Amino acid sequence: MDTFEALFVTILGMGVVFFGLVLTIGFINVFNRAAKRVRWEGGHDHDAPPAPEAKKADPNVAVAPHKVVAKPPAAPPTPEILAAISAAIEIEHRLYQGIGNQRLTIRR
Image (cartoon, rainbow, N blue to C red):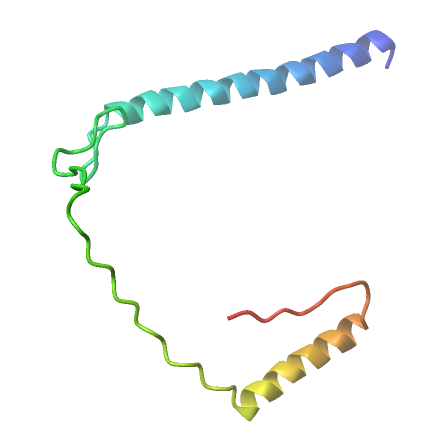
């Protein structure tokens, strides 16, 4: 393959990718315009103002604060759960033998 053929293949490949990107942009614009014409139920149009029911609250009216319900404290884990956690940590430690700074994290 000489230099001319290599440049031709490179330009052809870049042109195909560029044409694909232009087509993608075109499809996104077409779908966006089609979505603006669809009448969605339960909501409002893209460019329409909100429904008239959604009025702003009167700043002079006091709003009652929400009650915060305290959750009961969580029970400590049972010995079976602690044994399962320690077994998982031991298996992970034996499999990876402390390579790197990998850690097993258990989140609730």
